[in-house]
Image (tube, rainbow, N blue to C red; front, side, top):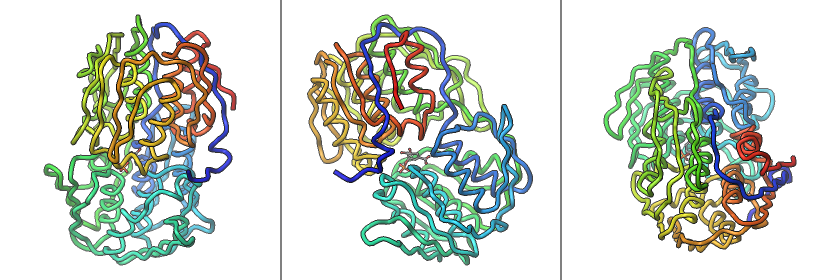
Length: 444
Ligand code: S3P
């Protein structure tokens, strides 16, 4: 197992079984959209107003990186103002750009730095330093940027020398929004056209937001083409609640008998809502109400009531549309009455942790029966979960999933390593504690 920074192993949560979850909650702003809002607003001419920005450590790392590039921002009580510098007026940073735990922040930033006429160094925490960056640096090198890894055997820290990009035609081997977005952002600085084609449609927040900021692009099926030399105009951006954060409460309500929960104003972009369809196929009662748009992003209130779940099969494009939801899906599958199987999900091995190995190892501690596959896992279902002492392996989504498993288990559960939850969902344990009448106690 890789060695984790000490801060990724801190935080301890005690969970005792809870009854039904009832009420109405909100989850914080979408992480993917918050990163993009900072980036596009920084690249735009004029001042953008961002509402609902996710004040989590991942998104703050992105904001800090752009501050080091000369972008000024102001926190207001109900918004974040970002004074854009335009496409080519960033300063060369005097310090290393430390992106913390954030794969999205890093890979998208590499696309933007590839277009700058200066060099910069990017790094991150132990989890991020062990994640693959070649998937973006390889095509960006073909566009004309130069990347030099500074530590033998790791992709980060990384020195980037940008400038003089030319467009490419790139067929990505992985369905990754981070790869697609890095290339589209670099394409804005490149001479000619940049085309990206992916094997399945990954989240399309970058495309939607670029269009909102006035960029023209051609989008057809799995292919996206952007012409270099375009400029962005400042906008007001309203960020919906994060579907991937709502997912923990959706599953909790789906597995705890008697639950009746509404999660308000959650982003329901179809490239993100795979779990909703999978849970419905398992028998969950989930409805969407009050559909509307925040800019180009669809938003709804999600209403979940308890119903017994059966197992299911998850494969193909559905994997891409629920790529961040497999730790919490494993909890739902463990509580289902029949077996489930996930295939075609090898990408899970290069997330904040190896999510296939980690979720199988940790859910077994509750008495669930799971088996690893190279590209996914199998869950037998039908087990009565018992409280466990488990470890989050430096992974925020694993920590939150194990806490939800604890609510459905008999006896007491302890989750060690809850600190990374702050990367995506500050306030998670407070909401869970309020909803359960204090069955969850997190100690930082
Ligand atoms: C993200 C894309 C996904 C996802 C990550 C956020 C994004 O990663 O897992 O949490 O905001 O672009 P990949 O692009 O590596 O699939």
